[in-house]
Image (cartoon, rainbow, N blue to C red):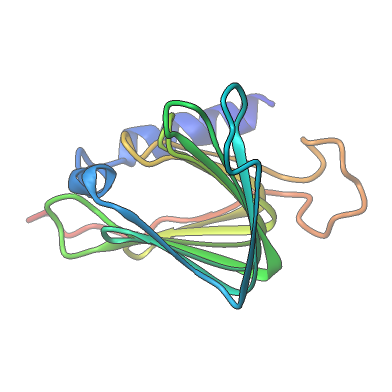
Length: 176
């Protein structure tokens, strides 16, 4: 546990001050899929649930999520929580002020528009520029670019192959 905490602090210290593309939150969200099912269209007191299946693509500004299936819940205030499932779910978003992207891959992705966070589960991998982290679980705050990585052993899942966290940090030029 102390090791993971130390790695988290190291990653936080190495994080640059750039953030995910700020303008993305103000742009419309577009969803594409082979099929969609909308539940509770005339809701008054609960969230709306929409299930997208088959080659699902979600875009909002520079953010893009692809999956085999997405379950989207929208609350009364318009905030969305999406769970993407698939053999490989992908996530990509441009970093604010930089010509660089943050990219992620896993078997399940959960995106919350209210907190602007994304979570990657099972065989999770996140790449920012040339730096990369791998583990069973990655939580990524899209606003601050802070991420937390856990191996399956830490999460109590001994059956997963991702028992340990792996981080690759590329050397930076002194001019940077």
